Length: 262
Image 1 (cartoon, rainbow, N blue to C red):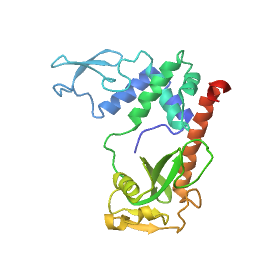
Image 2: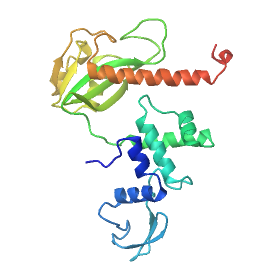
Image 3: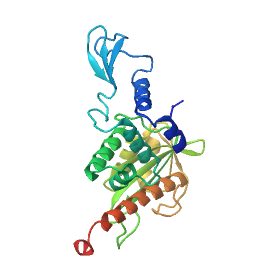
Image 4: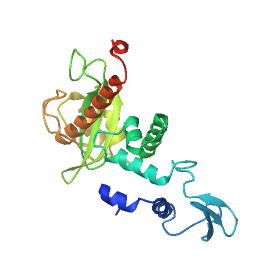
């Protein structure tokens, strides 16, 4: 079971000191006790804060080496608060909000921190979804006049794949595609979902060959109009994604004068 605080109160009680943060990182890095990264020796001298020197080969290593905290001049408990803020925001976090919450003196610092944290949250080579997965597309972007649904202009088409576990949302994968054609949609599904899984979609023809790709394809609704009667789990993810886009776009617009945007 993952060892994470579940509430803000638990977080504050657990990570209120620098020593508590260092101890937590130590257990993550060496869950069975210290091991020298050079010679695997289990004993080391604690030189300072998070720096250790191997008793055998004298190699020095830090708990934060190779992590997003490496070479930081800010205290770890401040970084931990930034992580909590980012992961607890329902509609996402932004640099201005992080700067205000942590009382950072520089907007650039807040922006760099968010960039590092977001990169760290994307695991390279992450596993594909499996089991029952709902799939649909949505257009991401601000409101514009013109055609809606599949074929809308001036927006990014994103395939949303949501794993369903015991009736709840599991893992999520998003893929931007060029269009709603079969090659684009089926390619996105192949990248995001394990073969043999059960795929729920609407009746759009772009998903018509999934059964021949070793998926169990179930059309749960015949309509293929984007924005109408969306699959429930995908619908929730899409609503949250759109809310983040609108919220961030509104904040971006508010930083410029009307003349610059006309």
